[in-house]
Length: 395
Image (cartoon, rainbow, N blue to C red; front, side):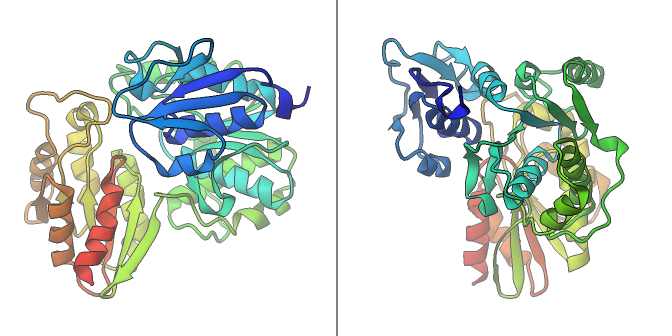
């Protein structure tokens, strides 16, 4: 049976269908023959790719239709009865030869690089990526070639995947409610990799030296991992290098948002100290760098406040907002102010702003900026709303 009919006759209902991951699963399941429907609380950009899928938008989840298979996003686990998203993703990965990219940092960009090269070389990839890739037309596609998947350790779902090729980019403790220690995370990844025929360990590779269209040492490392995976998939190195040089990035990964008053504004999904440090280093060659950072998750802020401060100290000025809670309940005494206080200790005299609301933070940073500066909006929440606000204030 071809992949295009592998789910024929199935009826799948998805809670949280508007997310970057679940929307992609819905697209593939529909393309591969299933009838698909779902629910989410709000409209999202990813839903525009699900034109023939019935999606209900409502504050509270409806009762799933009788007789349908129900899969639930991690964001709504415990609120709706159904199977975890990992079960659906594992089934999709089993349908075609798959490459899964995992690790703490760089998953979206590296997955996108691999899918982009396969696409440009005419190899018709399928892909499930945790962010929009403008050059590929979205975050997911149902092609007939290799299936490229961004794996996720935050809910341990990557452990259910059985690809032919796995890429482990790096190991860093980022999800403190899932893993208690770095050692536990190391064991988790090693157990998963033991069942994969071909493994790329990116930390053992040297960064590429070829010229890329995306900036930063971290992207040269991402490209090295992508090229190694492509070689394992049978792609000639020279062909892959020629293609990857044209890759211009994924959405919210140092994504240019505009320029006003001689100030360039970029947006990034960076939400861990290592990611902040990498993005700030990549922009350092372009003049003064002003950072607007929205912390993501109370648990992450509690455990990594000092690390965030050390990373942000590389900027010329920083404004921190209140924490974006996502799936977590507040922790007493934990707010974005923890990072502000740590930053004042790490770099005394630095220009630091504390603005709980994004709108106020955008006005503060715009007021600091002058021609030739770069403004970075950073975080995994809704901080991308700040970039147009900064540009408006600068105009």
